[in-house]
Length: 125
Image (tube, rainbow, N blue to C red; front, side):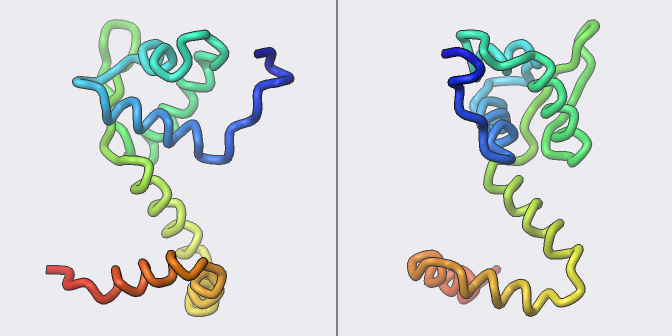
């Protein structure tokens, strides 16, 4: 598939895919190993993987250790944790959090709204 025909990833999708690969690995991986596991056909650029891993490291979602001239990365978070972090960052930037949360809940489908209510009613301890 050519680059023109390849669908673009959704925002955050590559991060989630990388975290999934790192989470499934038996140990830390180099960017090249991550790229190979994500896209053996070679359509994904090495620089996109390195950039994404660097951003994940800056956000403390992955570990990074020097291995020769390269780095090896390991997962500290999972895709769900990454989405939760993004939501928290967006919420923290708002002055009127109650309005944001109210609108968020009002736009959930019935199943997700019930799931959220059930989670809020769970005993945290």
